[in-house]
Image (cartoon, rainbow, N blue to C red; front, side, top):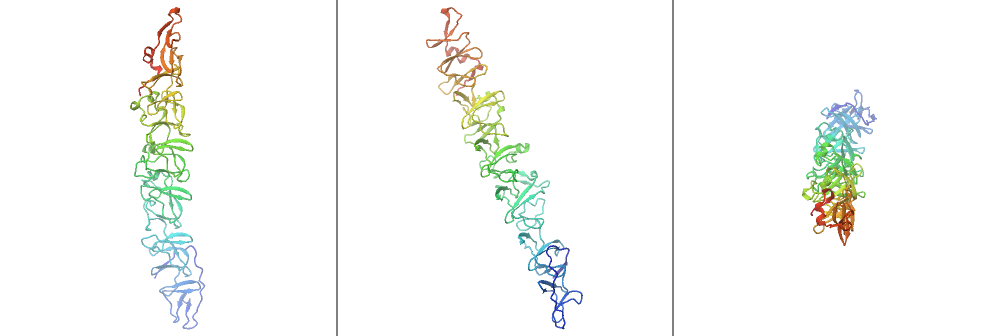
Length: 537
């Protein structure tokens, strides 16, 4: 038997014992005796009972090795530990603050049989008290803080990493409970899975499930996703809730098709959001440059919580382009043959001439290999796909571009295309110079190319006409084809199905001049400003 004096006590102490006295009136009477000033229990031979339990009323009492009742002490008998209150009654169903055998102060709990709840070596040994679970060591001391799967205390600088369980300041196990871990410190470490330093987090959140175990990914390949109170959350390999963007598969490049990216919104407590727009900074793995410069981009999640990436997708009835990590793209976007993202350009990066350059000669990368699109340049309001005709402010001037209902540029991949009586090349509408009113376009889609006239709005002049341009020259169109551009003072005239020069000031018999043909008055003699487009296929 070991006996120790109490330091302090709390909780429910047993009421003072109501002794049922058997005062020895005869030599062989058995019962309690206080004649010495200490309570003892005398047997029938009038000898003091020692190292034994005796009951009085509903309470149990212990007689020490000297026969006196033990009070205010913790008592160890064999493998069991008890506590005797100030009146000597054995504590039962009570919390007691006292010291263990090694003189360490702590809370003990003594059950209905008076025995202290104790842990067992090599595993987490919890006991339920008033609906909560508590952890006790082998001596019976209630434990607090972080613990591993075997019940060993984790007391390093960042215990949240390797810990599995947590017991709060009151000793109760965290079950179905969030924990705000604010003890980040100067160097809390790094999450391989989330690709973020923990010191970037204003707060770190952990969650302990219905069995008290921390939600955590099994490794750095896949984050752990769990639903909590009807909302989905992601957790990294250390059990920290992943805020904002994370890579679900960290061992593959972000550009890989199987590198799934998910988003946990800090706007709504870290909930994994589905069908959700967010304006945020990607992590290091996704884009080191954006991460370093804190460059924000728009991201969109699908109904399963995955970030949309590497394609054009419809969101709320509008179409948007997303790059290989999910950033919404604005301006000119080229999508590759397989429908994945190629490259984007700001609209003011290029001139009209850049779009008129053929294939590999073009400074615009991949313009001959992919489909060209245009997306709204007002990133903060709308970056959706643009269709139809739109005026774009290029680096050198404003220009009109045309896009089909699918969003693809008319005349994409460096080909000439006609739509609505207008010609387009890489989406650029082939308009005449506004001051000239008219210009020449070579239709290279047919034969060796037929020359036609377009106006300042790109509309092809059809039929047979004689037009006057902004420089006072005459333009002759026959059967919707260009014939000639001449600088005569008088309007050329047609006779017998042919066009001739005409001089009204000459003698009547000399007014008709030479025949006007394409061979002599055509494209070879035109100034460069008049020629809008003249390319072989």
